[in-house]
Amino acid sequence: MTIDNRAAWQRQPGEPLSIAPAEVPAVARGEILVRNEAVAINPLDYLLQDAAVLPWLDYPIIAGSDVAGTVVAVGEGVERFEVGDRVLGQAVGTTVNLPSQGAFQQHTVVLAHMAAPIPAGMSASSAAVLPLGIGTAACGLYQSQHLGLLHPSLDPKPSGETLLVWGASSSVGCNVVQLATASGYEVIATASPRNYALVRKLGAAEVFDHGDGEVVDTVAAALKGKTLVGAFHATGNLADTFAVMRRSEGRRFVTVTLPIRIEPPETVQAAAIAGTSLRDDAVGPMIYQDFLPAALAAGRYVAAPDPKIVGRGLEAFQRAVDAQRAGISGYKLVVDLT
Image: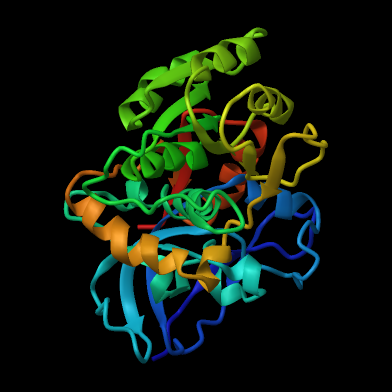
């Protein structure tokens, strides 16, 4: 099947995106081809535009991680999806160095075990905010080299333990709060005051202002007497997270979304997350196959934060990347490709 396809190419670091044709290979075993209707933007996208931060990548590349659209081809061995299904998927092109698996184009090859059905009533723009956020959250929460927590379910049993989430209103943070709650953990979180309602709605028991100069004392006091399973640092001041953990009871382990630039205290451990690594272990199918489809269909999991549509068409990607670079809070930028 020949499919016309165009993409927003990153020719070299430091250059703006360039719209040009892109080849669509035949889908291989375990893959699906998605006609993209909405694509979300992540901080990695502007980092890849600004510098060659992933040394294995051969430019030109097609960046982007979050797709939502319709299946137009199914590879051998794929039984969960059929042509015509609406899906969201976590694109891994910049991990595997394959432009065909990048999101910034009209059609993206997605690994079937990194995709989930979009429930009726959910828009593609809402669905697109989920993939990299939930994938990164799941890596930090469930992989054995990170927190290794109990898996989520639609009927979680209280564990009696608490997770600290720093930067809970970010894209990753929103998913961490929901997944941890669905795994039976109490969540104590930080966020900007304007996002308190969002974080509480997602399941946090208490939320504190991570911009408050007394936040370390305040959060440490809130955790007094609780048994921590660790902390998830999604964004914000990592030193503050370390300071709280040093004063807390339980497991003093911090899983972090970005490379760790400072040394943790002697009594605190930390590890950085590889947000697409769940494609290679049991966490990927657990999230995208076993948990997320049923949770979304039952209304027990929501797409958060809300999407903010930057524009329509491939030409809108550069504007979206620029807006992401400038900084956002409480929403996720999305390009409409319908």
